[in-house]
Image 1 (cartoon, rainbow, N blue to C red):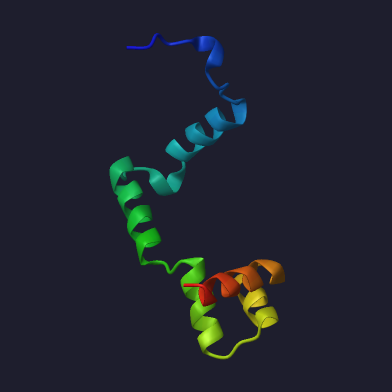
Image 2 (cartoon, rainbow, N blue to C red):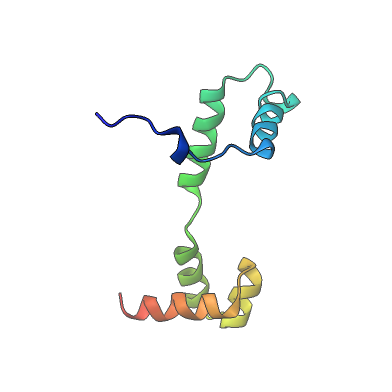
Length: 89
């Protein structure tokens, strides 16, 4: 079993500690178990379509690259690349 080498440990930033502390005490999280909150977030992310799926759907509907990029808040080049990869699938 390898020994723990604290010299190679990643530093914990003060911002990280503050973010965790403030999230734990925010009014919206009071009285709600952390596991339930995580479960809700996980379910929401599973229900959300991936970027590829969204791009494919909009392209199938006949939207231009510019329209897709604007609707999804992404760059034109990113959408072009996703559509090019789509052709190779």
